[in-house]
Length: 312
Image (cartoon, rainbow, N blue to C red; front, side, top):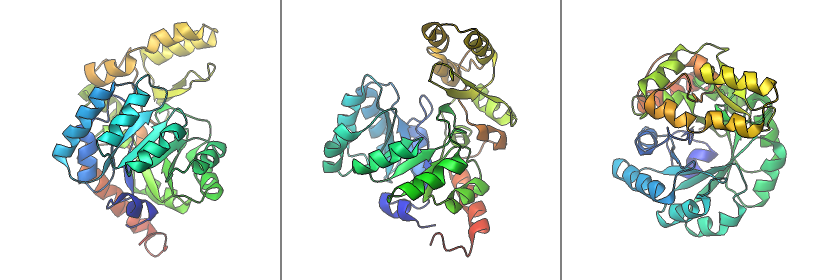
């Protein structure tokens, strides 16, 4: 399944694993890359030394391309930006900001830069900055989200730019991959589906929550504050949404979520922790290896897309 994205990144399949904080560490990234996709290490708010260690650990597990996702609002973003250049990472994806000030350094290091966008305006702006491709992420995604759905965002971004577009948000099986290609995407990014894999170093209770999730089991906190986050409903979301409806100050609401993702991912606190997951959780029914996930995605999509001429 050859597309602009597979040729650009030197990968076998146009499948990218999302750079999820506390989830996307070197074991998962290496496993996805070994399976023929593109694995990502999620830098999130981690210090540069941790990111460097993760990159070197991933290189011991795979000689295939992998990348790092950098949250540009992180207090360590500048240091991490230098680390990925020094360590020779193949790809950098970015979120929560504009990577323009790092572009020259990354380009000199031969890094492909692929920001995540939630609007056409940002997509156009980043194309002018010289990025190599874009991830158009719909509101169906887990974690921090925009407003537009994948179905409407992807084709509008595809029409607005001349660089390859990777679709994200609500994709968990071959039907979603095929749909994304029909919308004009050259690849797909999946997060929630890769949480429920054997290689994901995530507490079993977190994985169980995803397997048990129904179609209506995600909630969005923080819409009124301008910082919407999608996660699975639990005691924390019920309390947060109740206080949010009462107009409680943003600072007090934020205190409820501090350390919540780590508690859920690492400690298995799925009641007061923040169980980030996308709406696609309702489509995930079993724990598989990353290789099984990638091969299943590709075979299902291929069966639906044969003869379309969309890919080689």
